[in-house]
Length: 68
Image (cartoon, rainbow, N blue to C red; front, side, top):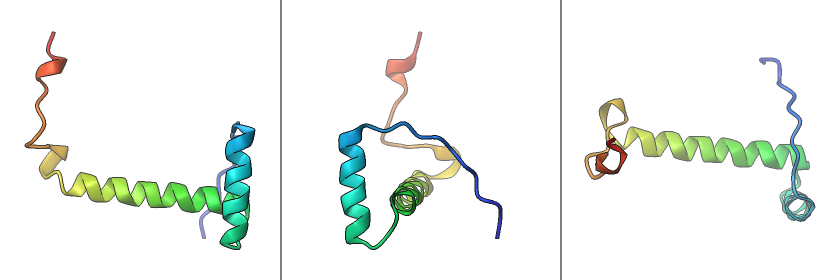
């Protein structure tokens, strides 16, 4: 297994309390819960990117608002 990276995270105490309760409900540590949620978000994003087509193109979206 690859070495795990350590990362300092500053988080709002109210959000921490919510994550702590959620983690306890799912029998995880807060760290494990945050890692699980991040992994799910990355997988969801990868799935959304793969549905956009080649090179991340999105046929329904234009770049007209980004022109100089």
